[in-house]
Image (tube, rainbow, N blue to C red; front, side, top):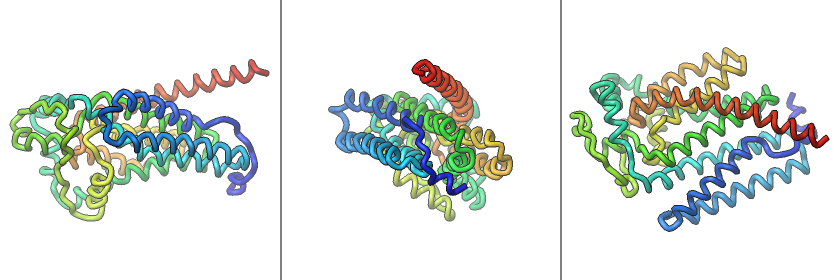
Length: 324
């Protein structure tokens, strides 16, 4: 099986995951030009785009010279790594628009009569559950990596479609965040005060988070809460709260994992998924409505991308047959 990854077997063209990255990069470049005068880190953003384009071109040239499956896997891995660059940019774009946290905080208050993001961690305050929910939240990255690697290694013939759905889902959520600024309770309740939120008063903060990025701190109880705090300090921004991409992307991941047919892997990852979904509210990263919307939006996004991929592949096949 290992030998299959080093055999010379040329598969022409770009992977769908690379095509999606190029399309998203072009779209955000248009946004960058539109906001050019107000962007503080525009040079870095331009360099990121040039770097991604250069990597795609270079890896394609290397693969054409040495057409081995292992190099195609490397091409996919690199596109996944660049997601680290695209996420913070959602804040760079959306912070120019008025934030809508007062609306989503009010929805939670109307639904429950209180703020789940504030009360959940008080009601379930033991070190065990804090660490359990933080573990689920942190392992989000690893469950996604495991699922994509499963396709690439064990069911390679379905990896392109899985990659299209996976990467396409990320980009759908990122586009939503760039036009719907919601910082999340850890930022909003820090700005307006927890007492204000508990009494059902939710001021409109407009573009406050364009200039202020302080958030509520999470109590460190052990290894996983420390890891979550570290990850947030490095990459978190007042953006991407609605719908929850943690819930949305982990739901897409669970669907992809289920469709592998490996029930053992699915049921082993399932507890992590459930802890993750609860953890998004527990650590105050999301309003409860964000997580609910994350679940249902994931199903819609998955189905749309699944159908879109099949139609694009049929169109491509028809075009190739027509050329012959």
